[in-house]
Image (cartoon, rainbow, N blue to C red; front, side):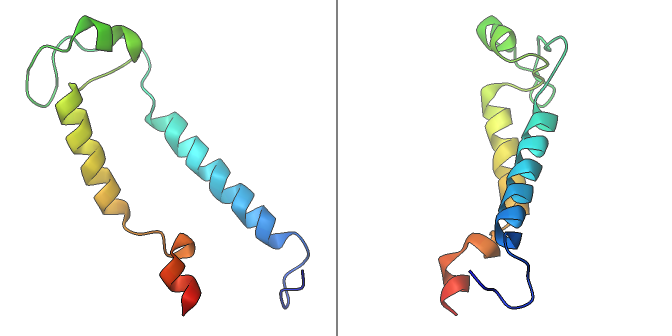
Length: 88
């Protein structure tokens, strides 16, 4: 498919790069090492099952969910993937 001055395959290269960046970001967010026994945010005990399931965990489920929601809000909307931006 011709796309102006872009070479063939440039769109796929951009998609591949976006996916690779997302995978790398997710890997960096994974914990490692020994999990904390107490949540760093609220000082509640982290259940043993959670500590064994996720290495390096530092927060209880409620605090982790709140932090992830804040992180998602900070990222904003992906304009490249928005149908609205494609329709304009």
